[in-house]
Image (cartoon, rainbow, N blue to C red; front, side):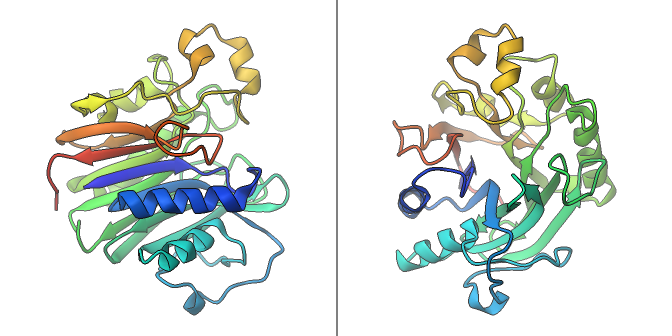
Amino acid sequence: MKLLTLNTHSLIEPDQERKTEEFARLIAGEKPEIFALQEVNQLAGEEILPDQSLKGFVRCPDFSGAVRRGNYAAVLADILNQMGVSYTWTWIGVKLGYDRYDEGLALFSLSPVVETDTFFISRTQDYHNWKTRKILGIRTAAYKNSWFYTVHMGWWDDKEEPFQAQMNRLGERLKKEGKTDKQVWLLGDFNSPADRMDQGYGYVCENGWLDSYCLAKEKDNGITVGGRIDGWKDRLEKVDSTQSLQGMRLDYLFSSRAVPVASSRVICNGINGPVVSDHWGVMIEMEEDEG
């Protein structure tokens, strides 16, 4: 099994059409069983697309919003279909970003999605507050005993919406709903550098989540952000971190259980595939499938 995560920074990226096609070609070549995307955007004023026009789309029952023309996930799914690669996918809008985008989360699966799950992890649930955070999960026909969530966390030092509180809400909800009785994956942008064990990354690990990068038998340097990106420009000036100056590992695939990971590699970084976002992606491959 291959799993992949990428913060797409979609529609904000220059030359977006080319980058979307390049990412689709990578997906078509690698064919990850499941991939998770964050910052999956659409222009808030665009035409609404009927669900029946979206091939492979599965609506999350808890999401009543609209999928609009130009939605990054919908465009990506369409390109993949044209390449002969069909994914089942779901998308939710989380908040209004940059005062013009419906910013959301998406998950794609090669096998049919049989169940979805979404809930707030931020204290605020205001769609017009850019600090609002949700997570989105799926269970699939091929992996009925596993849940896969796409995650985009806040920052450790945020006074209004601190990382620790968001992580606590996430863990409490999963436990309450009985999700932790199954294998759970958290895939995404955690906004927490791996070299700061006294902050978000360390807190996730302390709560029993296992970093697939650490589990992997083969791995690269793991760096997923190479420059000063939105949300980190000011923070990098305030910290003394060698890794932060050389690049940061902010994107992860965390597992609730110890699993055999054969490899972990950064993609879309100009070495393993073209750069398509301000983040680079991560793809892991398991030694054997899990059910």
